[in-house]
Amino acid sequence: MSDPAPAITKKKPIKKIRPARKQVAVDQIDKSESVQTGKEYNVLPDTALDCFGREKHADYRDDMGGVGSFGRQNRTLYVGRMREGATKADTEEIVRRHFGEWGEIVKLNILHNRGVAFVTYANELQAQFAREAMANQSMDGDEILNVRWATEDPNPRSIVDERHRLEELGTQGITSKIDVHADLVEAVQAVKSLEEGNVDELYPIPDPEQQAEEEPPAKRMRRLENVAASAQQPAGGALFGADALENIKYFADLARQQRQQQQEGAANGMAEGKGKPSASALVGGYGSDSDADE
Image 1 (tube, rainbow, N blue to C red):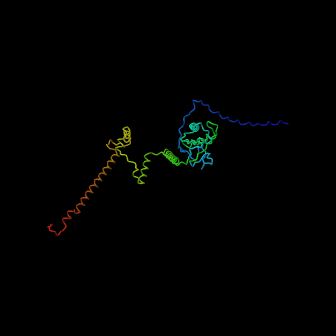
Image 2: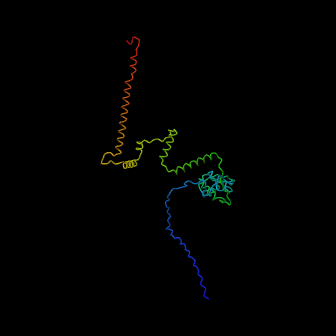
Image 3: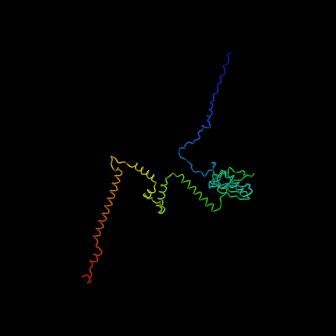
């Protein structure tokens, strides 16, 4: 009997080991920021998301907790179950020290002996971050804070002030993102005033002579140099260029036409004066039966 053939064993493929990261010394790290090319989108904050990118809801929860609502810009937090200090000043200092770490506090209202405070920040993003950071936390005592969104202030003056603040913020945000020249805006406003008939709101047209007097000498010199450089040079050593000659011819023809119109108007006036009898002629030719005419 012949010996059995040896079994053929397959070799496992060798896995390629990924190379380790290149080790860079601390002084060799490039921390310079590269220039971002292209257009910039989403320059204004999305009011439907909070500072953590979570979607807001159409209305607040019953307990005024959670992410919040996109229907109203809320900058005020309700802080409950807090332990007050020995005095009112101590309580205010404790609240400002702990909640002031998350943003600028523009208004603080503390209901003393009730353990409740209303903290208003400069913008809603700071209030969102502070609510997440201070919820179920403690300040100087061993309390567990109850931080929620505050309801809308029913004070009419506060409502009006908040509306004016939102209008100013919207105007500033829109105008800062519009990349147009100021002269274009003034021109559009002037055309709109003309269409509506508001002549008093038109922008005054500047006087060139007065503008030249008020213009600094250095700026005026640069403007004259730019005008001289852009003008067409005379060809063949001529005294005037082609553009200058065309302008002279245009104004000469215009002056000639005006002079002819004036002469024709004067001639027509004299002809009308000769053709019509004067008042004295009419009186002299009038027949009368009185003896004074004889």
